[in-house]
Length: 514
Image 1 (cartoon, rainbow, N blue to C red):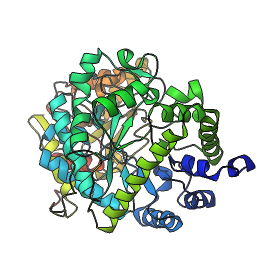
Image 2: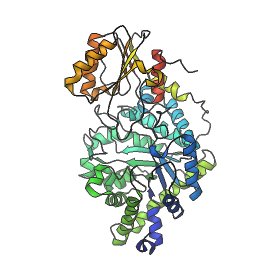
Image 3: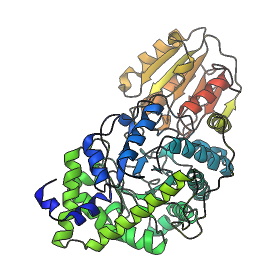
Image 4: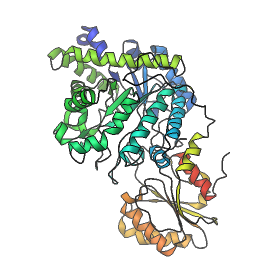
C-alpha cells in the first residue's frame, strides 16, 4: 500500500468494500488474504481456481479464515456455463432445457439443488441466473443460457430460479440487464446494441427482471449493452439513466448492482479497466467484478482510481458509502443464511421477498439427469444402433462458456468417435463427407451438433451426410433452430454432462440411471 493510500485509510476501506477481484490458482495468495483482513469485500472465483470439490471447499474455508463471511462469488449457471464442474461438464441442465420442459417447480428445485451444492462448497453469491429473452437466433453469447424466446416463459422461470437459489442461502444475481437476448454481438468484444425501441425493451426484455425483483433477487448484473433511446452511446453498465434511473427508480430495485467483467473489451478497450470502474460506480454500480485474468497490479490500480475519483470530486464519497453499505447488507444476509443453513435475515432486499423456503425436498443427486431427460425433444423413429460411428462437429469455444467437455464421447469407445471442426474451409466439405460416409458403411451413423444454425460448414456437412444416409440420427445439443430431416432427430437444449447422459441413454449408449 502506498503512502498516498495509507494517508486516508477510511477512504481506502470504502474502495476495498466494493471490490471482488480474482486471483490465480487453487490457493488464495497472501495479498488476497491481507486485503480481506483490511476490508476487501470478497473475491470472484473462476475455473482455474477449481481442481476438485474438496480443494474448492478448502479454498473457501481459507478465505473465511481471513475475515468473517466475505463475498465468495462464482459464475455457475449450470448447463453449458460451469466453473465448479468445468473439467467434466455440469450435472445440471441449463436454462434452455428447463425452459423447454416449462415446469417452474422443476426449475426452482434444480436451482435449489445447485444452490445447496454451492453453499456446501462455501460460495454465497452466484452470478446467475441469466434472465435474457433470447429473441435473436444468431445471438453469439446467450443461446442455451436463456430459458427461451418468450417473455412470459422467461419471467416465470426467472422468478423460480431466484427463489430456488436463495432458498439454499446463496444470493442470486439476475443478468444481463437490461437484456442481452436481442443482440447479435458479443459484449466481451464490443458494446452490443439491443435491437428495437425503448417500448420493445419494456415489453420484451424487462419483465424477467421485474419478476426477479418481485422474487427478492439480492443482486442484478448490468451488461455492456447499448440501448440508444435510453443510454445513448454508453453501455448500460456505465449509464446512470439505465442503472439509477431505470433499474433503481422505475423498477424499484434496492439490492446490489454487480458489474459485469470490467476487463471485457467492450469497455476496457475504450476506457481502460480503472476508468471503467470509476464510471461504473458513478452510474450506480455497487460491487465491481474484475475478470479472470486481472492481476494484483490492476486491482490496486482500480482501487487507486476510486480513491482519486472521490478526492478529485468526480463523484461524492457518499456514492461510495452507499455502495459499500449495500454490499455490507449482502454480506450480512449471506452470513445469517450460511449460519442457519438457508435462513435469511429479517429484512429482504426488495418488497415481497420473504425468508427462504426450507421445505424443499432434498435431492439424491438424480435431479439433474431427471430434468435433462424431460427436456429431450425427439422427432422420427429411433432405431437400435449397430456399431455406431458418432460424428461430433466441434465449434470454437465461447468466452463465457469456456472449453468445457461436451458430447457423447464419455459413452463411446475411441473407435466410434470422430470429431470434426466447424472451422474447416468450405472446399474441404466434400472430402470430409466422403471420408465419413466410407467409414460409416455398414454402421449406424450418429451426427452430433451444437447450434448448427450458426455454422455454415456444419449445415453443409450434415446435409451431405443425410443425403447419402437419411437413416442417420442427428443430435442437436444447442438450440434446435435448424432441424434437418433425419431418420431420427433429438434436441437436448444444452450440452451439459447431464444432457449428454440423457441423450446417451435414449440412444442406448448408456444404461439408464435409476
